[in-house]
Length: 89
Image 1 (cartoon, helix red, strand yellow):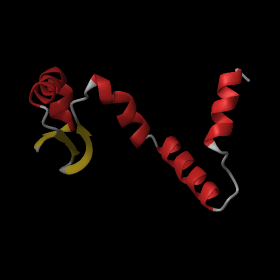
Image 2: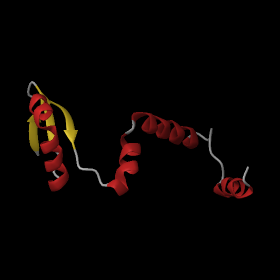
Image 3: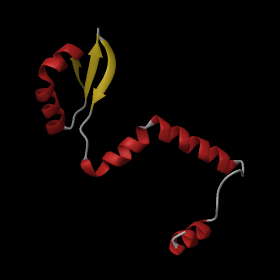
C-alpha cells in the first residue's frame, strides 16, 4: 500500500487521487508518520453499500435492531410487512 504524508497530499491531491483511481490500490495518509486516513477507489455501483457499511450511525442502528429482534422486543413477520406495502399504508 502506498503511503503519503498529509502535506504532500495537500500539494498533490489531484495526482494522488488519479493514481488511486487508476490503479485501484489504496493510499495510506499519515500525519507525523502516523496513519490517519486511507484513500480508496470507489466503484459507483458499490458506493451506497460502502457508505452504509461504514456509517457509524447505520452500524449502531443495525446492532440495536439485531439485539431487539433476538430478545423478541422487535420484529414483524415478512408477510405482514409485504401486505402493508402492497396496501400503500
